[in-house]
Image (tube, rainbow, N blue to C red; front, side, top):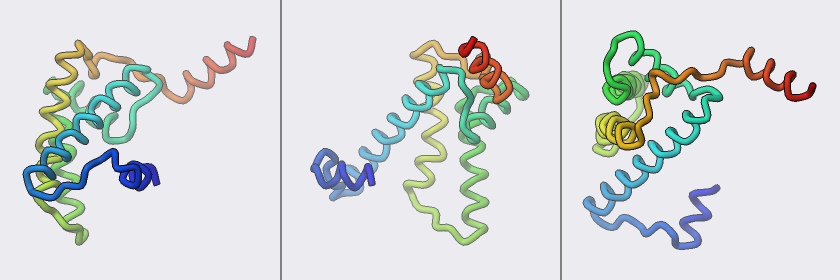
Amino acid sequence: MFIDGLLWLGWIPPARTMASGILLLLAGLELLVLGTWMYMKSALGAGPRDALMVALARKTGRSVGLCRATVEVFVIIAGFLLGGQVGIGTVICAVGLGSLFNLNFHLLHFRAAELHQENMAETLQNLRDVKR
């Protein structure tokens, strides 16, 4: 509904060519990475793919971007094997997302693999402490 509203308002131009479509896709990926950085920086927990990306980076010593790209490629393969469609945008997302994570996290001096994410038990304890 949110995207429908933005399209209705005319805030997002329609992609009429392959080049404009890829440009909009890359802009959307950049927004995704920045949004991920903002919520991960709060240290209140990470989403499933982000948590897997961080866990793989910690265990392997590889960059979070490489780990994220690996996760995305495996998700694409699983989706394809289950009958999903894979197009150029899917491939750009899978491969490009990891590079954008590395670039943005480097520029923002954010070390996702070193950050402790709060777990549910810690969150509940912190909520109890606030009430006192």
